[in-house]
Length: 228
Image (cartoon, rainbow, N blue to C red):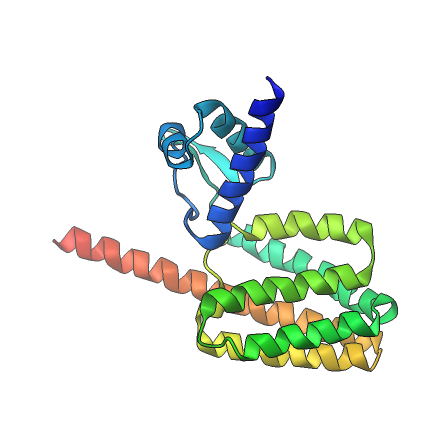
């Protein structure tokens, strides 16, 4: 394969990642090479390369009689994913207490303030929330932690829409961030880790409630279709 095809493949890969993150592509959606090639105005070769890379990341799976599709995580996989988030992000908070500069901590404060101002904009809230967590990881200054977190974050993309679409959850996240920031600013590693773990646990509960509601809605839709 030539260099141009490899470059196109990486470009398509990043565009599909963006589509997954934004909800254009959702769990279970089929990846049709012809349709994607037409939409992204490329040949099918870089599409195939991008799909292979997404499969290697665990974001795409091959479904019998369907083909390549965005992976649908099982209940157990979602639980395991949040368990890993609690461990990794708890450690990140503890390390940030030691390693973060005052400037980095103030940047976290500003990001949370921007979230307060964006409560009526779910898309912006979700983006700022990702920026907040990314800034914290960077402040921890541990490259191996960053590598592990990156793997988990990629898998998080296929869980589904952000729980921050619910105003009550968005408000709670801001308060949870505030508790974490208080511990960071006091340079208390134990309190920072506990605050982060509590934050991830709360996010986990919100996610499971969201998934349960989605399954209930699907069940009601199937029931209606059957009655019709």
